[in-house]
Length: 548
Image (cartoon, rainbow, N blue to C red; front, side, top):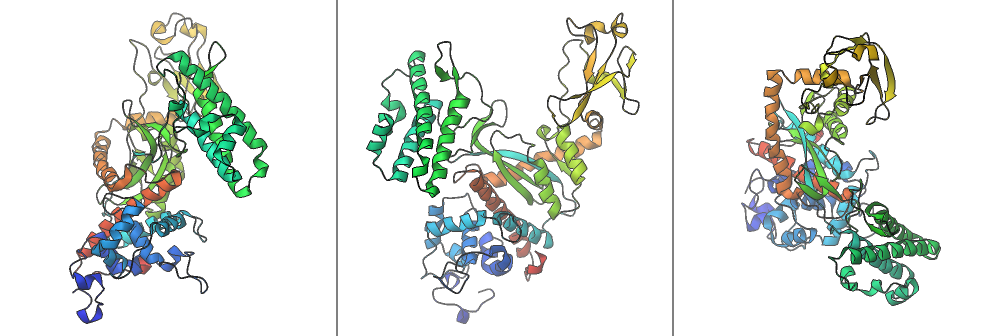
């Protein structure tokens, strides 16, 4: 038996029962051999049971091993994770549990995950983020990262855990949930609440089953929606007026439910010609799609691929497979929205990052400008499309600009220095230059038909606030060497697959905070696999705690 002799083992030790239970190079082997060195005490400071008084609690070292083992394969529920820990000798050996000791309960694991989601008292950062960054530093110290890493970033959908509902069920089920919450808060029977509200729907098992209407008929649907909207506004006003009679600890949940109902009325409904509220025939910007998972949103990975839930954003090395930073946003967030945060976290771990590959979604002039100016990192991405040329129409790139002299020359050879500094429609905080040519310059110009829109007598061109960088980006994209370097970006799908095959495709709990904790646990486990492989290749593996 490696590292220990039979005389040093208990009869209840999993390695005594099966000496080869820990397979070399696996996450379980790494946790079983080095768990005390992997996680220093300061990382888990504050876990209950550390003081002298009170009951003994499960050691944090055992729970963090169970938390990581949960995502070491394809991901599983907390209950399934605890059930497996009862019978799996490999998991028991990794956690240091003997065969005669019952594993932690599902509630204990849930409390520990809540503890990991809280901010560390010394750093102010969530503990799961600190654990992930600590493991990345260990990987760097053991030489997991390639000598010439190629950094890239991308996103992938994560389906939400809560049920996605249509507008009718959002209103009806929302009223029924609010009624149940109010009955529990006031310790009053639900029947009495339904009588006080004048809403028998609270006692129904199904919203759509309660209304005896033909749901395919537009008129019947409009009547139901208008009635539900009126009931929602009336009930919310009733609850808010009497909120002072409820215990303070229960008011937050009631107010949240009221806000969700009013959000559905505001975003999903509109008035028709008869003054009734009907389902709006438009797309709301931040539409609520679930009552149980209020932070989930409709998202699109492409024009034909729609999903409901969140987006997982990943930044890692294409060569070694090491993932340096990860975050989760709502499904309707742009792919490039958290790019600056991802790059900053990776830059804190690896100061020599100079370039990050990304697809077209990361090629916007503003995100490239912010990342370059604040972090000195170049985003190597295809430039944003300028727009298709309609017939012989001229585009903005056909006009020459002298940024030093603040002049612009049209294809007809006319130069103007007349411009205005105006706010840009997409960038409220940045000014934009609008150049204008006189009527004399445009009269008789051979490009007049291709330049001026119908009914216009003079030409104006509004520049992008980062026009200089945008043009330089488009020009550099024609370089074959840059195109060759960008072709490596396709290898990033391997890192995305690493996240999804370990359970990152679907959230296992409600809310954005839980989705972030899940994503960081998956990434930490995948990085531990790389670390275990590197240690397994050494004849006498050793993990230095000071490397973290």
